[in-house]
Length: 123
Image 1 (cartoon, rainbow, N blue to C red):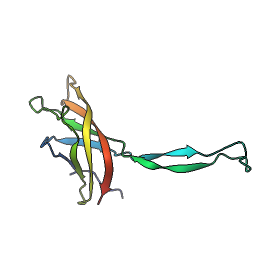
Image 2 (tube, helix red, strand yellow):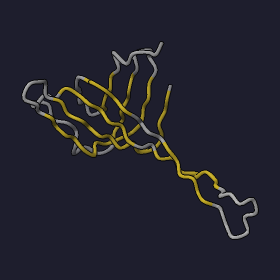
Image 3 (tube, rainbow, N blue to C red):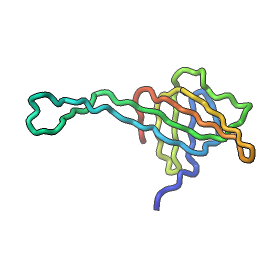
Image 4 (cartoon, helix red, strand yellow):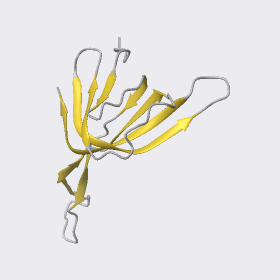
């Protein structure tokens, strides 16, 4: 049986707090560098992994409270995702977007996109 995400929190060094609905990411990746050349003999493309790793982005859907300003103008700072089992994912990041949704018959929500800068630590 899969674990529930109920109880997951996201904390910002800036002190920004919100009621979290869902968290996607970080989507860590690295490029594959094409090393294929005219003399490649096996008829297949060849690659090597890049030395650089992109921490990607984290998308957080949250309950929107109009009186609480998101840290959209802040510089990069520590962000920590804490999972229900006590595991954590921490990194430095900054908001790249904050999009509000105000439906007529449901709660107001917002989606915050956080760009990861530097290393992602999973503990």
